[in-house]
Image 1 (cartoon, one colour):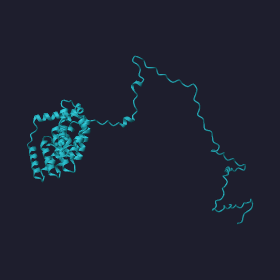
Image 2 (image 1 turned 90 degrees about the vertical axis):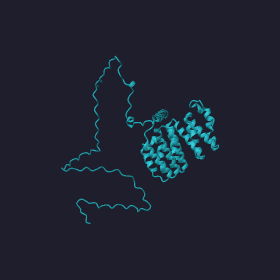
Image 3 (image 1 turned 60 degrees about the horizontal axis):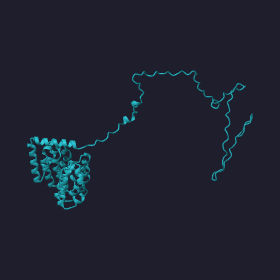
Image 4 (image 1 turned 60 degrees about the vertical axis):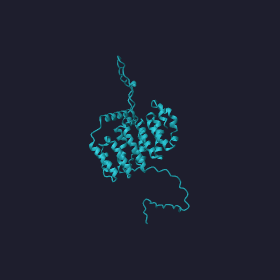
Length: 340
């Protein structure tokens, strides 16, 4: 592990990872050695982060650092978190960097055991030296301000040390002022003493020196040139999609330069007149004939035509009574009367 920095000496970024390929392919095996070897490995990985490609940092280095920090001793955990801050700085794809940070916040800053929260604070302590003030506040401080209510005093005590170190970057933030007021009411005497010291530093702060401001500007300019934020493709406009596509200019009929436009030819008249539309023929069934007058002067009412006979009745059902013949009305003879 101590030879990693020597192997990458005087190598340009990207090519150093080729020389160290056999080492990176066995990182998991090396990480299972003694805690002293793990501590040295973490230190070397932090120093070589700026020479490694983004794929190696995301797929090999960061997972091994998380594994050693979770499974080894406090010293290995502290060295791993320091190296992780440098790894995050040299991942050019901001989306991949934020993905690792999202896991770091959810699994470590709000972990169930106190040493995971202490490890997150250690990474933030180192990140204050690695990142510019603007990017440091953007990436790390939101979880730090919520940890002032941590139930473990050692966590709050280490948190106060981070506040003292980054006073120039966070002193004007409203969330920091709320967090500091919470620490000023802490029941632990050491935490309370640190909170009072931080309050005194805020009151006496007169601004950063020109050298510090110049160094921070250089960090911010380097970050703006290094990190790449991939923009999402714009959503298609439904109104533009519904509108008909304009014809290309090559298909439009435009007269050539110097030539006269073609004359417009009027349509020739048709010598034959248009044929008349056919008239519908009268339907004799829909228009019944008018009633003929009776020779005696009375109008006869037309008798409708008899209906065609229907289908013969089928045989009676077995449980239905046989049909009874209809009763015939007595015929009335002319000149006679019927007595009932």
